[in-house]
Image (cartoon, rainbow, N blue to C red; front, side, top):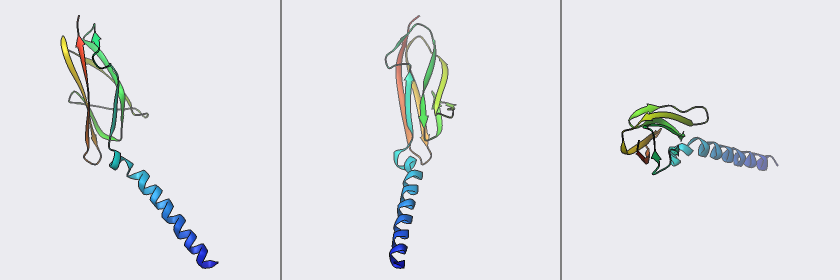
Length: 112
């Protein structure tokens, strides 16, 4: 009985360690995640001022058109940009903690 209890303890310890290891290194395997919720791709804007909203998770650094931005506790961000008339490309870049880089772009047209 004592040998069975020890074997069961080791199996449970191995399962707990495996679950902890997979949880902690999930961001290494998956990398950063980005979503731009606003503005939509191909949107026509009547004003040069646009609010960019979205989420960024598991990122060590976020940049919107080359300048750093910050997320709240939920991983959401909201930034205001001043765009030029005509076609504009909004780029969101996330650098992961383990060297992965992810980019998300939106093309919008400003007509006023």
